[in-house]
Amino acid sequence: MSGLSQRQQRIYDYIKQFIRTNGYAPAIRDIQRELSISSTSVVAYNLRALESKGHIRREGNISRAIELINAEQPLPTVLGGQRVPVLGVIAAGQPIPVPNDSANSDDSVLVPEEIVGNDKLGDVYALRVKGYSMVDALIADGDIVLLRYQATAENGEMVAARIRDENEVTLKRIYWEGDRVRLQPANVTMEAMYYPSTNVEVQGRVVGVIRNLG
Amino acid sequence: MSGLSQRQQRIYDYIKQFIRTNGYAPAIRDIQRELSISSTSVVAYNLRALESKGHIRREGNISRAIELINAEQPLPTVLGGQRVPVLGVIAAGQPIPVPNDSANSDDSVLVPEEIVGNDKLGDVYALRVKGYSMVDALIADGDIVLLRYQATAENGEMVAARIRDENEVTLKRIYWEGDRVRLQPANVTMEAMYYPSTNVEVQGRVVGVIRNLG
DNA sequence: TAGTTGACAGAACATATGTATTTTTCTATA
DNA sequence: TATAGAAAAATACATATGTTCTGTCAACTA
Image (tube, rainbow over all chains, first blue to last red; front, top):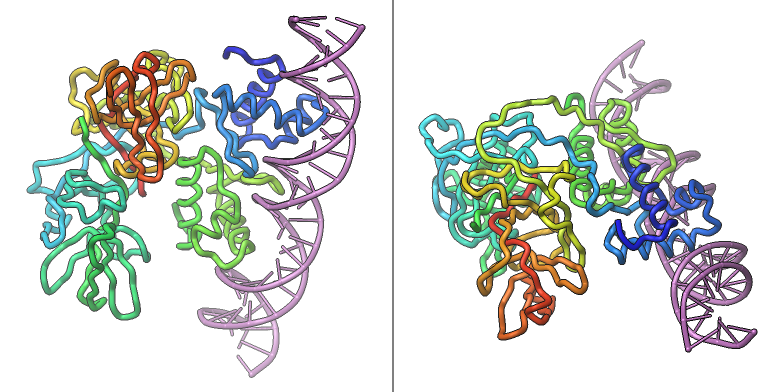
């Protein structure tokens, strides 16, 4: 911790300790009170210094939005991952097998628990994405998407949706519009598709993305 | 997560995701806006419910003082893949620690072997992405990027580059142009930056991306 | 049916909290 | 010493943010 004035060092240490104790960052006035600083402006002054020196990050005008850089962050304890089956490839117009028959799938992917919590892992599966229909949702060709099996979805969620009478499955954002459903690609060059609600079946919701650029 | 209404479940999930992305908790109005809830009082009402059910802890009258009470059961199962340290946050203009001092980092991420082969894992590390400077490369705010430490890079590769005399590190595509270097954000709304070659140091190359949408 | 209760809405309110402005004090140096 | 610049102080300001109050409405229930 180089080039900090004594006051800046004390402020930094206090923020660190406060976060460790409380789980959230102190307000400027908390710092002022604790360190017996005469004015909030002095705290603000030194916080700016700390930020420009790269020791903290702040979000303007937002209460208690101080993050420490290069310090232990209160991130969840990381334990282990889980393996889920890659059931197939998904693209506009491509059918996929139903998630149940994972037995016959010999491809699988290790899922970081950052993406999928330890609970309810049984109903997560993976699909390899074909095509660029989801680029605007930052999903590229070749990515692996992780889906949690669920038969319902909220408006705007990204889901694997099956069109029953065509027996096709696509990866789209879903919007319920009365008795019809809009399936919206995340690609401005592509058109939305509309189907009767009864003809669409949600097969799962996207909960994660894994990309290999190596 | 038992006995939660759907709304409470969504609020809980949003808080969790918000903290993971921002490092601090959302304000009541953040929750209200994101989940399209009509009134702050409804959020407050459900936060009280979440608290009395033991899922969160709050500090009265204090902004953003929501803590998640972690009910995560320690599941030790680790199958494959490798754990690499998450060394910090990377964003335009923010310094990160050099990959060597991974000792002091207690955050880590489990990497699918699909992204990083089993060999040469020692020089892989992870950074959490802050900001949208790489959206056109399909990397979003909050993503975790995996980097393999290397001091050289080919034109067009995505790298963590350190500008020596500013001691800053950014995630950019790199182009060597004679005795200068162009650092190109993957976001059409942002400008490229130019530096003398001698002033730029490659800290690693992006080999993977992990995103949590759960 | 009248009363009760849980969930939600709308609007106001109180204050917690980040910023800006101006002035004063300290400190290094020509 | 004079003086510029950094740091601190005092104060006011703007707004971000938690809380309260009153009311609606549907689902129960005596």
